[in-house]
Image 1 (cartoon, rainbow, N blue to C red):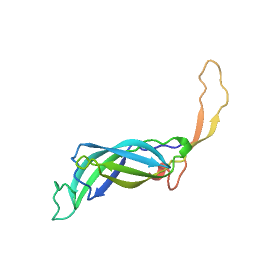
Image 2 (tube, one colour):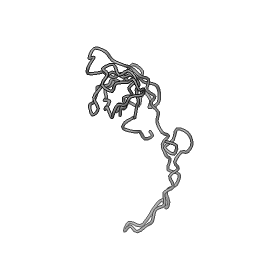
Image 3 (tube, helix red, strand yellow):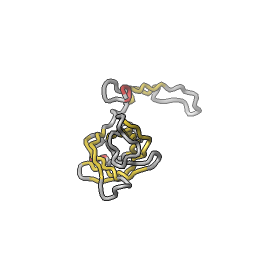
Image 4 (spheres, rainbow, N blue to C red):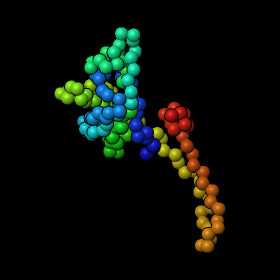
Length: 142
């Protein structure tokens, strides 16, 4: 398969108060499979003059998260839609769900290895040609 980022940066408006520097639990669901991860609160900021950064409901406040999604097994495929559900400490019986899209970068391919043999004593220089996919949805454009 391709590569992956360990975390994803997410900005959420009107998210209930979560203190900067805390980690919230998060549930990820993809194709009926449930896994667990986390959402680290990077910061918060007001988006209007009337906003209160300490408002428990988070009205007109943007909360910035680094989320750590789990890896789903290959039989589910790397790409597809999932749902991430955050649980807020102030309201433990409530949660907020957001869509999340998983994708895999195409893997590079080995196009050439030369020479195919060398001396037992070593000293043979090897040439490898690795082709990295290009275009949208590749590491090149990430």
